[in-house]
Length: 448
Image 1 (cartoon, rainbow, N blue to C red):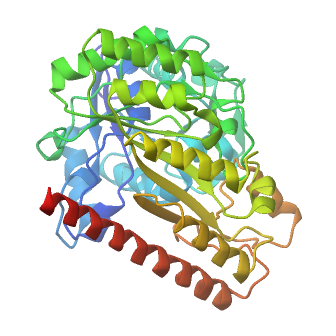
Image 2 (cartoon, rainbow, N blue to C red):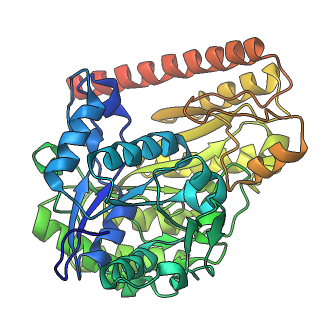
């Protein structure tokens, strides 16, 4: 039962707390774009606010009590939460805390985890009433319309729920949005903790959905589809112009997994940024096989200051098994090309795949620190729901019970202790490399 009584529902869209729960005062200064898009569509008919706990520098001892106070003050009719696998437990707790504040509150969960394993997501979160499966903008808006009118939401595509017997039911799947240019720009206002969001550094954009590649650790194809959908170059640049006018933001981050996937569109975006005098400094992510000299030169002219490569491994056989479709030589050539044009370059690496041993982990650390990257990030391979690695975990001798809240899972044939030690050696080596690179940068700035 909803309380508003008017045409517009009070909707609170939330990101599950993580840093907030630690009570250290540390914050994460970025607004989730997925929630922003959902909120922008919903805001056409309803009162939408955002609860982003990790933007508040909380230093107390009762974080859930603080969140209950906020929810009580906001008094929403509907609480929508977006979660990835690592934040699912926090999302389930947030819904339960909200129900303690007001049992009449309707709770909705969306995001990658809900879409990958809807039955498990509902069964593990009894305080969640509805699940949005797949792209959520139109599903959530139609759910709100049904709740507002008092009609059954069961005919809304892309939903999951429990019946009176506790069985999980799913409506017909929601097809991906074919034309991304029809979506409004993500809503970046109406934040509960608006005084704590620092937008002076950069704003993020998403310009692509879907991925044609088959990297075994990535859930993007299962969530967004293998067919790639692009926002048009003019639409992308229009949003950048609006961001500069409305938020006076000095830099940008393209949050696409592979910004340069469509070569023609990338060149068009760069040309438009130059011709419309919108050459703000920006960072983007891409693959080593999705750039060439012309692309890099265009990125430089348009203002690109840093590229992030998903490299993952220094071993040719591992790269093939991961599904990267490139070899170490391709990585070296791409990194050298980018550095030669004066663009800072960061590499992401991953170890701990099921076939890896200490020697392969060390080989990846050797490779990562040999490329002359400005910075290196190291991750432990995790079989997230919706990935091929997750499917492998069902058929191979991998852990049957995984706590995704922990940053490290042992998928190898090594003992847990041996893997922890191998990972720690690689991490310490990369930390030392990053520190040395930072000192070089500081010395250069001091002497310039």
